Length: 170
Image (cartoon, rainbow, N blue to C red; front, side, top):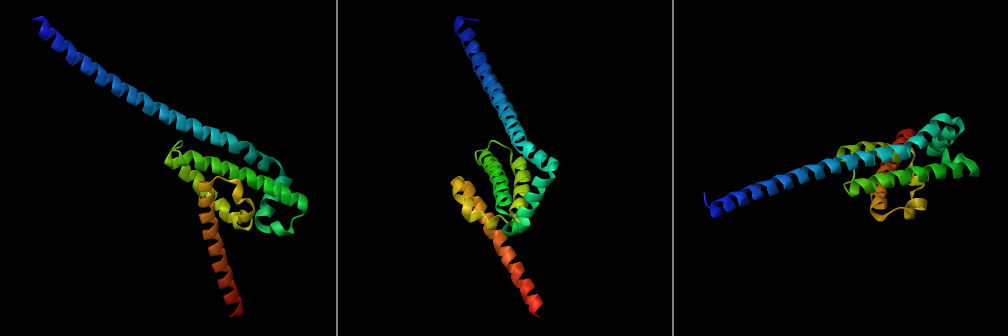
C-alpha cells in the first residue's frame, strides 16, 4: 500500500470520526435541553409552592382568597388590598409560565397542564372584574392572551346571566 492509499483511508476515517462527533454533540445538546426544561419546571414549582402552602396554612388568608373571587365588592379595603396582592402574585407566576412556554423553555405538555389550571383560575376568580385595572402591568403577548381568556369568560357569564334573567321572567 502506497502513501496515497494510506492518506485516502485516513481521510475516510477522519470523516467518520467527524460525523460521529457531530452526532454525539447533537445528542448531548438534546439531553441538556431536556434537563434545562426540567429545571425550568422545577423553578416554577418552587415559585408556586410557598403561595399554595401559605393559603393551606392560613385560614384567614384563604378566606380572603375565596371571598375575593366571588364577593370582591363586599370586602373591606384591607381585604381587597390583600386579595389584589394575591392576584398579582398569581398573575406574575402565570406570566412567567407563559414566557417560558413562548420561548420553548418548558415542554408543551407541562405548559398545557399549567394552562388548564390558569384557565380555571380566570373563570373562578372572575378575572374580568379586575383585568382592566391590572392589564398594563404585564407583557404584551401575555396580556393579549389573558385579554382573550377574560373576554371569553365575560361573554359566557353575560350569556348565563341573560338566560337566568329570561328564565326568571318567564
